[in-house]
Image (cartoon, rainbow, N blue to C red; front, top):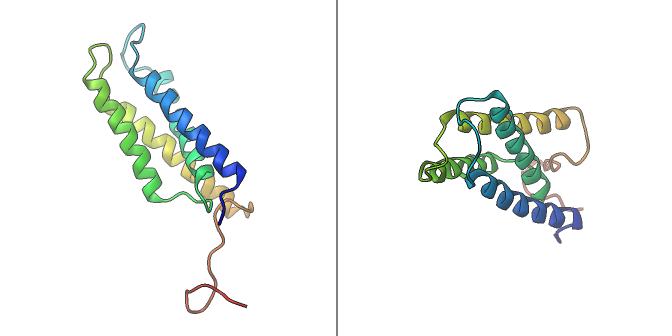
Length: 135
């Protein structure tokens, strides 16, 4: 199945977003690195955004546990890189905020699917054999 323009564009936006978030996560910061609720909200929001982009970039539309695991691995990698930088620090709370953004994105997509919004997830194969349907 050819990739739609929407899917292709979303993949480009996802790639650019990952580059930008990586850069912003590694540059020096001003001010305190103490626990800040706004910082955790930014983490959750960024990973909610990435989750929705991953969904939009997948063909056919779908969000899998593999997608969520890859996003978590990305976040853990960022935290690991921050641990090596003198101006940043490793934070388990940031990873929790990242996971909450991913979970929120998954829940939002699940709610849209449950509400019957078309195109949120691909249609399930309803053939009795579980194989492709042919007519």
